[in-house]
Image (cartoon, rainbow, N blue to C red; front, side, top):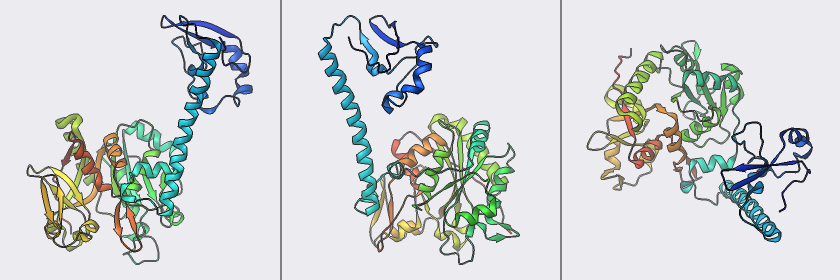
Length: 401
């Protein structure tokens, strides 16, 4: 029976799970000739090499080497099976690569409907992933079990100044440094911090320090897109907690983060695995007129958070239209009158949070020219749609001034 062995490397017969047999490359010869024949093997075959229970034996590609010793397959039939199986494997890979490329071309040319494109699909199609200075950041995240994400990529179009809003001096320091110091002064220990930068990136990094761990948002597609880019900078299979905060909010200090972390830990103990995230909210009557620009918190009859609606989404609603939230429907005027608003500060379990964020869809924020954004707040409706995750809340009052 023919064996795929282009280098004529000596083979060893090995019993495997009773009826199965493997022809395995001898480790010494394989190690010597691996570099010579590495380029010969297709890339996908090199990736499916695996180790047997005996650690000193290295198996070749199991797709081609695993045979049934009790079945006599004619040589010609086996060759046909090998040929069509390999062809099907490469065909599937090529189809996936081609469809991804076409999808990206449709997105870039404006032919695709952005409101039907998931965030994870858009990020995968773009293939733009450029985290910087993250080696030490990842080590600290593993040790601490927590990471702080600071959003600093926005242009701040309403903020008329000669420098980006996130580095504008406030009380003698750039605004973004307050967010960095807040994460470093937490009682339980400094939280590793990573920034998402974009607008005037070089100027921002020169002000904050070029050694700062950061991810660049090349195409600014909203807060959800900015946060999701950080997933590539976190350690693989990270299951700790993430805090999302903003670089232009000096009022979020270490005492507030301490309180949020305390509430987060308590909810995890009380609710268990169903618990997903904690959201910091505020009241219009306490915050004043400026809070009118923030999203509104939607609660059900049992006072559970079911959704967050951004101010831009409310503005785009037609007069007299209704927005449905499960069994609840609210008009445009009723949404404006909601007292509770979203601060944007979130602390969440990373796995359910990023899973939900990857499944959100873009929202159209402008008609002419068309503009679309992925809102980070849409993770709430995604979590609630699963029906088995809870959103916690924390009461925190502080007099300002």
